[in-house]
Amino acid sequence: MHDTAVNVVWLGFVASLVAGLGTGLGAVGVFFVRRLTHVTEDLLLSFAAGIMLAASFFSLLLPAIAYGEAEFGGRQVAVGVVIAGLLLGALALAAIHRYVPHEHFFTGREGPDTAALERIWLFIIAITLHNFPEGMAVGVGFAGGNIDNGLALATGIGIQNLPEGLAVAVSLIGAGYTRLQSWLVAFLTGLAEPIGGLFGSAAVSVAGPLMPWALAFAAGAMLFIISDEIIPETHRRGLQNVATFSLLAGFVVMMFLDATLG
Image (cartoon, rainbow, N blue to C red; front, top):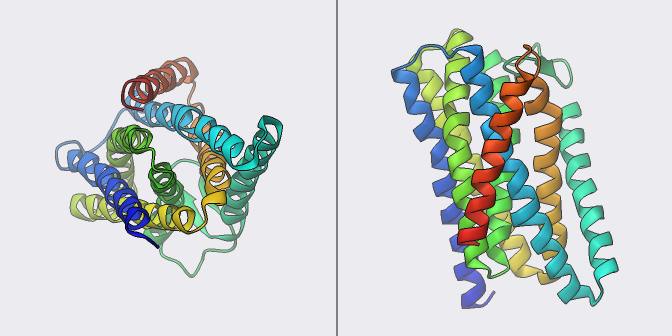
């Protein structure tokens, strides 16, 4: 791997690390707030979902099509590859959710029998399932050499991690954990993002033709999380309108970041 590729890999790792630290930074609020109202909870999670949704389109899928055209020489082939990559990302997350035991804060346990695992570990696994594909998306965003796009993506993911980190930590308090335990879990799960970032940037730097596949895969994984988990959880208490407009606000923020930074 030549020097430029190595630099891109490290950029992807560092940027995803900084974005991941946003989870721990947002969770600091748990030392000042013991619980969130249902409205605030749904606002925070929906805002994060809106950023993820916009990032999937503007920072992942559109660049994936552009890279695909350059790599494969035709727009139709590029779009076909991106569709395939997106579906693979969604199917991978669906399989992980089915076969890996984990627990969501509101909708409860998923996956195989979890009697042997303590509840806090189920929470950790669930949050890690969210954060790894986000970090991978940031790493892949840098791997193509488009630093501006990578910065926009890292900034957006970092911002969405702030409310998500607070919501996670407060939910852990509600599940019976101390403030320190709740913050520490949120902080540690944020560290899944630089692992994902290193994986994504290294893989694409070694094999350039993987770029459109990797971008689309990361987008599919994030879209699965949004549709399968976040939207159902924020719409279950009759606050659909609040959650929808908060999601739109997050979408607008990420769209602005991508248009101005990317």
